[in-house]
Image (cartoon, rainbow, N blue to C red; front, side, top):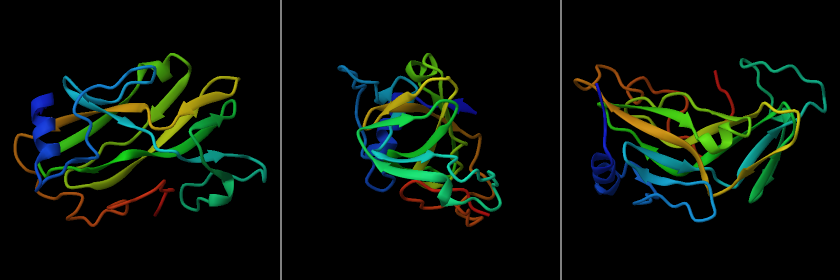
Length: 186
């Protein structure tokens, strides 16, 4: 398994049959913002302006088998403020289509990590496609800001030694083709 370069990522994103990343930003953008776009061995994705901010107004129990949208406040905004020791869900601006012989892993941006904001995303499996749902955890005792349309995380593309036997599409995965911020499903 090897990590794929900017040259490979660009080719897969611009190939009209693959369209691996849409919209695709050809190079790093960073002027007075948290960087995003193509990097040496990855792609820094942006967070959209759609947020679901966790609230405990109803003293609900967080249950991944019976998750309630009532635990969130929806906001469409350029700057999301996450309460202390809480989290928000969002999605990438980019829509991803992962090739059958590639696995994608996500790492948080150091700019956010240095502020106590952790970004978590599970791997993007072979032949998965959709907007990626992002989770921002504010580990600090203070409110924290997330900036829409700026960098949120970096995706690293790993090529397998051969195409997988069963892809996410083959399994009819429950998050296939997701658009918008997607809550947990069973």
